[in-house]
Length: 167
Ligand SMILES: CC(C)(COP(=O)(O)OP(=O)(O)OC[C@H]1O[C@@H](n2cnc3c(N)ncnc32)[C@H](O)[C@@H]1OP(=O)(O)O)[C@@H](O)C(=O)NCCC(=O)NCCS
Image (cartoon, rainbow, N blue to C red; front, side):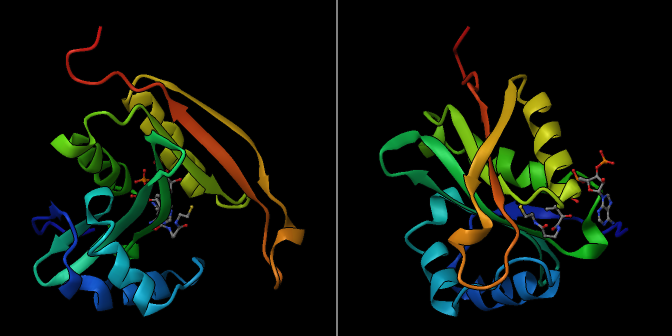
């Protein structure tokens, strides 16, 4: 575990290449095109966060608002450098995204997780607890929905989240 200071920021286009590498290094996430990470660091930067430690990107959370339900942040990919796992960094990145003024109306978080990814399920369960709200899961994407061999992805719904000023 590192003692160095970690900064959480909105991503910039200049970081897209390092994000691509971080996702690739997890070895378990689907690696998307470089172009996708460029879009996430430009068009979708308000709903994404990175963790910086010196010059390195040690964490990335990508997300977007559901087009037909804009009060819901869909968390797409979460990647934490293996030397920085187990420190609650992923949840901090998501909480930081929620704290932005532009995201003050977000009431729900949705995400998909494969049943074998116990670390991710634990992380989202702890996040729901931190946000003092519920988490529930249901079937979403089946194995047959993918071209190549791929585990199913269950949908996790977190919320409602009480926002500033709400009782
Ligand atoms: C899943 C992941 C995002 C969690 O991020 P994180 O910041 O480490 O999350 P947390 O610190 O809350 O730890 C969550 C759980 O991970 C497990 N964990 C702890 N240290 C770990 C380590 N060094 N390596 C792997 N898992 C670890 C623990 O079970 C922990 O839960 P616990 O503290 O209640 O026992 C991160 O492990 C990761 O990037 N994994 C590879 C990519 C991935 O699976 N992304 C999610 C896809 S949906």
